[in-house]
Image (cartoon, rainbow, N blue to C red; front, side, top):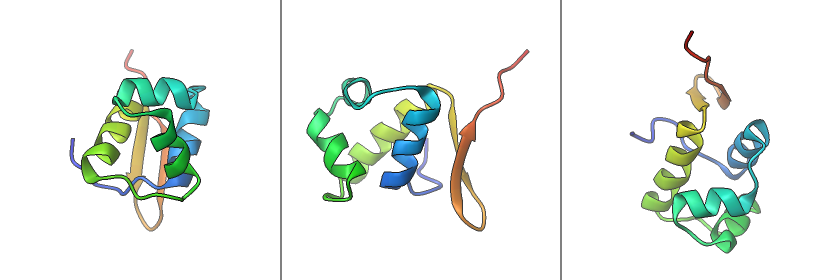
Length: 81
């Protein structure tokens, strides 16, 4: 997985909302502390590239697709029939 679109604090919060995922679950799946997720989503810290990749990977594996057009965004991936 390449970071084709930059995950932002707002996109992280929105992705969790779409997935009904809390910060604790995201942190556990990304192998980071809850404090890392909280600080990132509040815009207080800029996690390392590896941490951002781990967060994005978890969200994508759960069904979020990050888009990159004129403005970054996200959507739930269509389920295969």
